[in-house]
Length: 131
Image 1 (cartoon, helix red, strand yellow):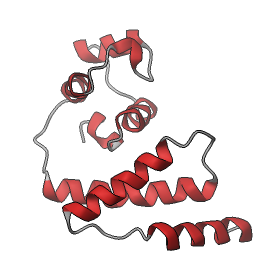
Image 2 (cartoon, helix red, strand yellow):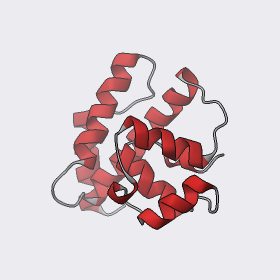
Image 3 (cartoon, helix red, strand yellow):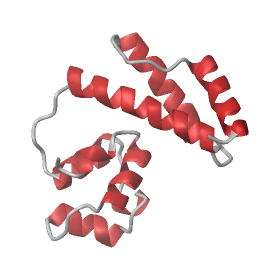
């Protein structure tokens, strides 16, 4: 690692203290940190992006354990998330025509689209890949 990045990342680790999640309280705390990093007005630093990735991994693993998902298609998951967040196709981070194609089953969700949707809805991109 680059020394400046290493120093900043070390400071962030001390402040946030990310760890494997075992309780709902820890889960809520780490979700707040993710939200803070995602909503940061300026672009995230590489150290902040690394921390965001670590936090997302911990949250994802906890959610998989605590809230196992039934098998849903990417289209079903996208439709569900749009309903839950009261969003229309034109409000999503991918073209609305693509959203329509996904919802109708004409197209799948690419990895890049899954990442964009995951960031937009603050969930793991895996939800939109049907894995």
